[in-house]
Image 1 (cartoon, each protein chain N blue to C red):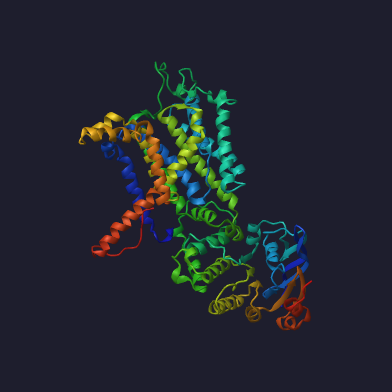
Image 2 (tube, rainbow over the protein chains, first blue to last red):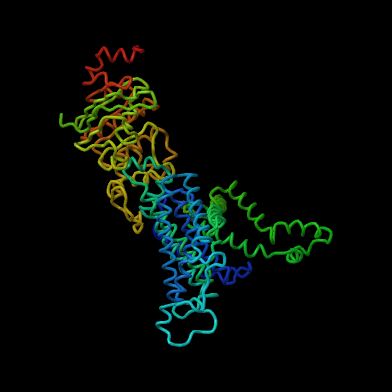
Length: 385
Length: 252
């Protein structure tokens, strides 16, 4: 917890390693069967979502159960930007962030009057309200159950202004100054934004502002009797966190220009809570780790079926195979959530600090083993947060 | 002695049917150490809670240096220059001692809110130097990288005192600063408070330990059953028959 002794250089090193790991994902994820753009995009996007969520939960300790609302608003704003203005992704991302920030300002203003479980319930209520509104009253904006989609007849004012030629036959695709934002270019766009977000998150964690947010989590009484007004601090943290969610929502629309109300449902809010806790609340890389793991489970683990299992266990004798495969089958394929649930329980019970705490323990164990053999000099504790 | 700095004017406060304070008048002069003593349940902590805005009095006014404090938010009162050490130390358990003291230093420099997310803590040399200096004053500099929660109760109290001192308060309220301390720690705390006294800060101390009161206080007020029953310098108060009655018998 004592951030002071970590020099700035260490953070830059962390950022550099992080960037390398993210940008090289297409290569090192190959053996895990996860190196395809659609999934890599999701890793990056939900990583951003979780980073933002962690700024609120990890620093201030306020558990929001309504962050899906900001994800959804970001998506809708982005798709409208594609429909009305241009297929360029930059305005879409900008509008996604702004609208989510505005909604977060309102919801935060109302919800932050309470703390603890009451705050969580209020945010949940506002998010469910947004979800139901998107389905009913706001249908002209959200296109209800069908979801907001692109159409050939969309105005796209800016695009029409600059291109004289007749519109292409199919639906246009999102682009960044001519580069189509699908497949690997889409992933690299999201990856660069993720790295920027990670950098912002490091800076917030290491700033006086971040110290104030930690103070709110630690002792609100002391904050007030020290002369600090906690409300604007929490409100700012909530808005920043909502903007990250809006950014993630707009990127979902960038990689697949479609926005539906189900993105705002409470299950999406719950998912980001799971990601953050699984990876490690209040740590820098934990939430991204959790997001990637959950998305990996959802996409890869769920596609395992009995045939795959039979191949994996083909070294076993037939009689054992007949028992093992159906048994294991419960945990893969459509049963992937069972495995995830078990993993989550193990983490929460044995590693309250999430996977990051697990890695730290392993790291320390290895190092203390080396120290006993006198192989390395005792160094200052610099567990990778 | 100088001007009045804290002035309580007819403060009353009751909880349900129970009257905790009734028509309390208290005058604290600038630069003095004013002790408030009294038996358990006399309303001493309630009085401090009214001063710092934690409780709203039913009637009466709290004036500090010509400004009315009644009705103000706790953080506003703190920014005006009133700091408080609590009976059970209110510190940031999960942070290092250095961070515990740096945080109030930011509050003192930047006011009640400032969005300085683009700055790095590690580049705030001035604040850090000041924090280390204060930690040295309260005798905790060697442990400054330890977590607040790992300290003993006496050390937590000293840390909290440091957190208040770095705010450069004009009035420091201390709620039983030596409660539950061993004699050695108590003497250390008295020495520390004497050291602050030489800086000319006004202090109000609530205390049970008469040893502490008579080694520190310039003025003593005695609170019993929600009323000030005696006021004056320590020797006068010690001899006052009403005070003896309140402490020794005087059930009503």
